[in-house]
Amino acid sequence: MDLVKRDTAGSPSTDTSSADLELARKARSISSYPPLRGQGNEMDVAALEENFRQKNRSCFVLGASGETGKALVKEIVQRNVFHRVTLIGRRLLSFEDKAYENVVQEVVDFEKLDNYAQVFQGHDVGYCCLGTTKAKAGTEGFIRVDHDYVLKSAELAKAGGCTHFHLESSKGADKTSSFLYLKTKGQVEADVEELNFERYSVYRPAVLLVDREESRPAEWVARKFFGMFSAMSIPITAVAQAMLINTLIEGDRKTEILENKSIYNLGKIGGKP
Image (tube, rainbow, N blue to C red; front, top):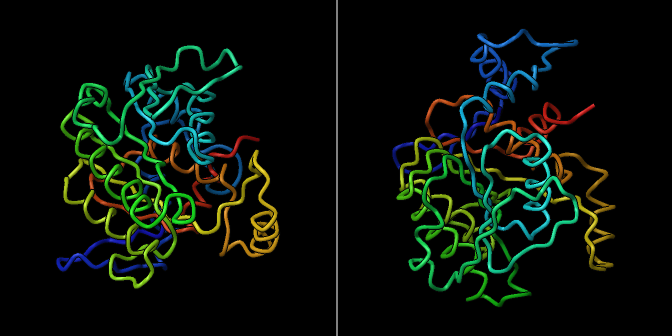
């Protein structure tokens, strides 16, 4: 897996040659499970799921109304590996599928998150897919959502007992960038890292390939173009699958930054036949 380990100065350094070795290391770490199935390095995902299920853990998801969040919640519900799943957002979501009937929903005011500290208590795993755009929310609104809301949520999650925090970021995130979007993403990555979760996983996908419900012609054209280049894009389902599979695989309690290729590889492991 492409892990970007932060050095003592806080700057990321990428060892892209370690991708396959890291995946193999994680595979070896589950040697107590049934052996790998099929051909090649395919992990026994069913064994991973059952092992994790027996741990009786709970999770929360932030940003479940967004495209990645929706795909992630669907993945979580279908695999049924958590004994409790809580969606934290600014409004209730509607689900027609009965598989979602046991999903708990908590409505919060992100401007007053301190008043909702109890909502973040008692979760082992936290997934954050919060995000907006400068075009939609303006500069201040974008920073408020993608940095302030994310960081405050992470602080409350840590105080509430969360041990593994997942953050959806973006390819090119860099707190020293001159571009607002990449700078904000990089800054919140670093700020959340300072909270010292037992395990902190950051995902930096490239252009997300998704068929939105709303009509965005320009975005449709962009998806078709970038979809021809795997290094520049990734299916949103692959991101969701990677986030869940990475949860099932035991880590080394360290910060890990998964770049687009690593997300794609984990997504393939999580893809159902």
